Length: 518
Ligand SMILES: Cc1ncc(C[n+]2csc(CCOP(=O)(O)OP(=O)(O)O)c2C)c(N)n1
Image 1 (cartoon, rainbow, N blue to C red):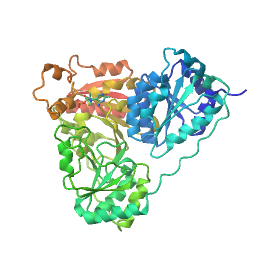
Image 2: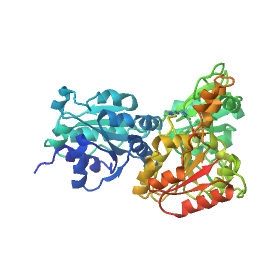
Image 3: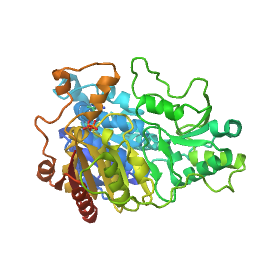
Image 4: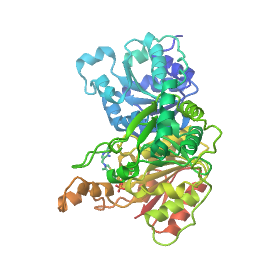
């Protein structure tokens, strides 16, 4: 018996090592859902909102380095998932979206769910294709996987009409292996070496993407030791490896004046997998570009290059391979504080308790701006940021990280405002028993926007403006909400309570939520 198109697609994905599917299906995807049963090797994870589904696929790629698939219901389902697809695209995560559509012959009737799916997909995808024939869907599926795996990682959206899914399909196709990342050319290495040698302490190596992995950072540390250049990363990073034994690296601060101050003495910036730093937003009378006037810029490598290889080549060019890396973090845990919580004490508690190999998913917004110094001496761990500025990324990304790395403890630092965008993620964590400890910073406000109101020049905001930025009327009851979604939880109001709750969260195998009242 021949298989239908949906089954040939699922078999293609599994044959191409795509073996996780984050789903939120509807009628048009029923043949794909049925095919998941008949094909072994695909783990299916249900999300109750499409932003959870797409964010989970982002987190999966950040930890595993390979794409997961998603299953989304026509244009509206995809549209619900777009914000986190935007974040994933900015994180340069590879994802294979499968979006169901009406049967090709049904489209002309303009039924309720008919929409321009390609139009919805295009801005947040690097690759889009609709597959009108069941015999061709396996080959198109393989192309989608190849697109998703193209370095550094791409969003591929494959549209699957219902008749393509149910008509007899062709044989499954195995996607071609990804091409290795391209090496940087020798001229770029020579130019970067010349720039850093001439600039000395006025030189800066700006790192992003996979240049923030342990080995690449080690080469950067040797380069800093040899030339005296400073090391810095972009303001947000998809995955930074840090902690004891690794080269310590800071981020460009969010606040424009702070960022300008950090960068004010840079004479020559060498970019490796990073962009020249710019402000998150424009503000009246403030610059968009954060580097000082006259700062020269040299690009060593772009996001898609072999960044570890680029840094190794630069270190070799500089004769720095034999140097001991500068800025290595020693193992140093802060003392546990007590009494009322403040942001520095929270940082100390995290620095004291983060377990080896933890994955920190950071959407703490204003609460976490100062978390880096006191956590840099914790055992080796990695730190994930939101990459597209669209809040509601952290709990979904934590799902994908936990699915990709089941042996690691995931610690999610979540603003109470941000958390409400994709709160359904807690249900998936409970259902899949994912090892995630979520700390919600319950300051009952959009605290960052209270500051932004002043930053954009609004003096003395009135009660209506203030009311748009406060979340205390009513206050969200996070502990009961978590419980109702199946996640054990507790509330902490002081350091002792927070320490106890984090220890408990880390000790249990499944998800745990802590509402930290600020
Ligand atoms: C999708 C989306 N909607 C709105 C915003 C604007 N925004 C940025 S931060 C923020 C509030 C964050 O509040 P919370 O997570 O509680 O952190 P806090 O500022 O209190 O530290 C909002 C609404 C955004 N960035 N993305």
